[in-house]
Structure formats: structure tokens, C-alpha cells
Image (cartoon, rainbow over all chains, first blue to last red; front, top):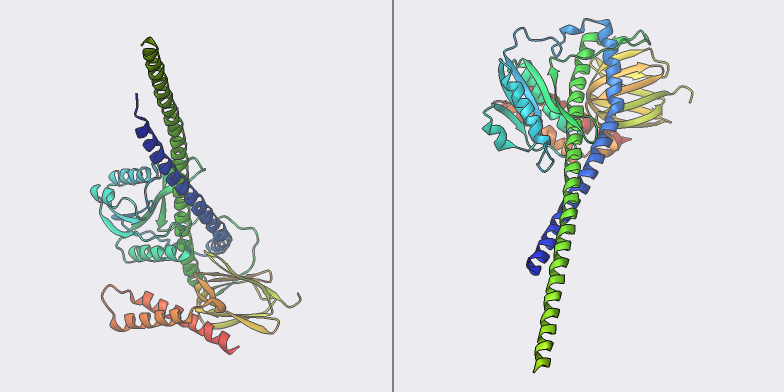
Length: 286
Length: 137
């Protein structure tokens, strides 16, 4: 028979855990909402810059731009890995890390890693991949300025010839329940262009190439921000799901423990009664 | 609404300004350009500087740090790397970052990228200028 006091203590500690998981879930929900609203507010900007880019690329020889033109020989590749800031979010971090390590293993070229996010410094170091830079101080709701900082670094890397290709590795947000690790090439940029029907005869000032340079700068910053937001969205969702199921498990556990507590109490009462009855019977016999 | 042009300044962080304006002056590579309603379609590269725009005889100022400008259908759209309205500029911070950028350029420390330092200097100066313009108004 389980000790009643032990069960009570256990229930108390499980309840504490439940409070923590509940709070973490709430935090994840509010951060998710904030990230999503950031995503929304950058959309008009992204649409407009895509529009301008379409106009520019349909007209001129955009392939000569230094961000679009591929390097002649691709010897060094840089993977930018987006992980979360902390754990407790299911397989989110591990899945993307393994995906990245697989990619690097299957890549015969020289690979380097740039890590964005605080999680897993030791795990990544243990994997033996060369980490050239880490951005551990990113907030949970990425801002445009953070994206610019990383984008500037990556652009420098590419333009100085320290790397020949830059790929982003992150969890693509598909729905609240599923995310998929994917990789996308950032540099040299491969801007998708659609033929825009509205044909204004634009004046370019000072000339199309200079404007394209400016647009490409924006385009790359944008791309990075949208990936960061998407990755974070995924992280918050994953944590939300993990914490919801944790809270549910604590509920089941508390129910089970309550049941065995009642049983123990009942057993104790029964013993007591039978002792009293036994005692009374012994007195009567006298 | 006559003789006005729709001005939108947006950054990746969201819209900074969205007004109907009588006159917009923007910093381009070859100097400041004024835009009135009915301007021809244009796409231009924007420099670090101050965008000035007039709404009902009152000028407003926004510091921008590079980007692209597109004019079409009586609409000026400024896509900026970052933008700050003069009202919300923290002058102490701007001055501090100007000082920092100047030091960096002077010392030419190893590992410091001169172009970037130069750009951040321009940005800081643009912010200060927008602030001063607002004070003078």
C-alpha cells in the first residue's frame, strides 16, 4: 500500500510542473502572435520590392549584378543554420540540425556553418563541423535590424570570396502541427521573376544597374528576415504543442495519483474501522 | 485631394509613413529631387539622407538609410533599409553612433570594414539632420 504522505507530495510537485508548462505555453502563444504580426507587417514591403525587382530584371541584364552572378568556381559553401533560442520544443532543434549535418556530409565541397540562435552550442561543436560565426543574441521575435546585421555579414562573406555560396537551413512552417526542414540558396541570389503586365516606361535614376544594386540589398535583407520569422514561428509553435501535451500528461498523472490517494485513504479507514470493531468485540467478551 | 501625391515609406519592419503630400523631396545619388503630383514613372536608388514632405504647408521629415524609390500612378513608394520619423529620433543615440563611426574610420582598426563604417556615419548624420530640421520648423 502506497504511503499517503508520499502520494500527496508527489501530487504537489506534479501540480507545480503543470503550472510551469502552462506558463511556458502561454509565453509561446504570445510570442507566436507577435512573430506572426511581424510577418504580416513585412508583407507589403516584400510585395513592393518584388514588384520593383520584376520591373528591373525584365528590362536589363540583371545577371551581371554582383549578388546574382555566380562565382566561377564553387569551392566553399556556407550553410546558415537557424535553430531556436532554447530547448523544450519537441524535435524542432534536433530535426533541423540533423538535416543540416546530413546536407554537409553529402556535400563534397568545403562546408562551413553559421549558426543563428542560442540552442545547442555544444551539440553542434561535437558534430565536428566548422562554425565560423554564431549569432546567439537573437531575440525571440526577430526585428528588421537583426536581419540586417546577419545579412550584412553574409554579403561580406560572399563578396570577399570567403565563400562561394550561401545556403539557409531552417524549419519551414507548414501548419501548426507540421514543420519541415528545408534549405534555400541565399547567395548568389536567384530572384524569381514574374512578367508584370503593367508596363510603365520607368525612368531610372541614376541608371538601372545602380538601382538593381539597391534593390538586391533590400531583397537579401528581406529574404533573411522572412526566413528568421518563419523559423521563429515554427519554434514557438513547436514549443506550444510540446507544452500543451506536457500539460495534458500532468493532468492524467494527477488524476491517477488522486485515485491511488483515495484508495490508500479508503484502505486506511477500513483498517481503522476493523481495528475498532475488533477492539470492541474483545471488550465485550470480557 | 488635387495636386497631391500619395507618399508611402515602408521598411521591412512595417510602414513608417502613409500620407497624401503636396511635395516630396528625396535624397538621390545625384542630389535631392523634388516630386510633385503627376510625376513621370521613375525608379531610383535612394541614398542615406532625409526625406522631406509637405502636407498642408507643414513640412515633415523622415531619415532614411538607403533603399529604392518608385514613382508610378501618382504614388511615391519608398522602400527603405530602415527609416525613422524625425519625431521619434533619439538625438543622443544618433550622436553617439556618429562619434563611434568617426572613430572607426580614423583608427582604421584591423577587421573593420571601411565601407560599412562610412555608411553608418552617413546614417547617423542623416538622423541628426532630420532631427535638426524638425527643431527648426
